[in-house]
Length: 538
Image 1 (cartoon, rainbow, N blue to C red):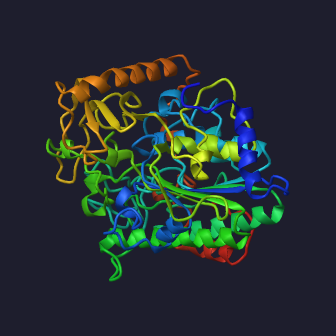
Image 2: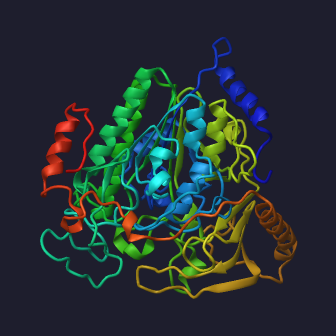
């Protein structure tokens, strides 16, 4: 099995042994899990990673009280593939999700793929998803049918529908039309015909979403889920997929933060701090909290994009185009990662193990005492020994799929082998200045030694001894990985489109408005005060 560590039974015994070391006389108790996934966040967006960042005191506290992983990677460099891989432990080349789903997508994450929520629910967990889904919203692709007992959030990115509070984007998009015919907008990436919906389970409760209150709603719903699940006596799994730091950003500039981006980063930081306090209030040591990002910053958004830290992809920058989101440069997939579990995971520790969001699935399954789904292979590892500080060894080989820049979507044309990074394809993503690096195919591959060249500035000379020594190992690893995928149980996602599946609570109203402007805000405010009856669009 490529990329796994032993059989499910070995994993189960290891997980129980890990817990038993701290409490040898106590019965094994399944821990709670909270996975917080930030959107388009940069490695340098945490002060704990990058000293120039000052807006993240709560995340920095989380790093100080837990373990910080500095060589941690998203499984893809764009939204849907990254999320699908986190929830399945499998790359898009296996699970079928190779590029983003659309507002009109009929399909989603293939139904024969098993999600982390499904495994944990089968192991006795209460499961909740709050925030962005982007893995299909039509029919049984909706999160309510993918293992989650409760869902509250938006079905895709919050720039994929108009709102009355459009926030800050580059360039800006207009608000939803209110009356009469819809005005056409020249920019193809502005959605004006259908408003962004907010779901509770399978019901649209607000359309368009009020972006200015979305953070508070997420915080309240997350806290409510944690309280409710804790009171039930069952362990819980909460998947909290934030709108931050994807555009449009909704927080105005603050004198206490660096511009619009800094103000939004500060808001995200406060939200994470709030969730940590709620989890701790139900007993420190009962909950593992894992914070990370879905991919790197969206460079073409300029000052509204995140901070790469040192991972600038200098070779690409010299040729034009982006080296961040959508690309396989470090800035596209090296993301912040913090894991906090008081009394279990060492505090004040920095790990340089090569890890991935792919590892979340097998690791949490192991810690829950559950078994991995059969009849398929996983790219993720059970990294419990690394979390607990017993080892600092992660992946020997890590694959980086094409994610919307050059090359076929989902194709494997970059990989990491120890400290070496090989590229078979580069270019194809837009930078802030509008340039798009030329798509280039490299045979033999470009190879960088990241130990010496973290900025990916100067590839090894193909005539050098170092290149000649490492190329055979890279070629073998690459060939073995592709063969392993080709012989696996591979899924195929349905990317067909049909306007009829667009989420719309009232097609008779302009932009699918549910009510006159402001009506849903009042309803939601009343609900926040304790109303528990289901809301439906009128």
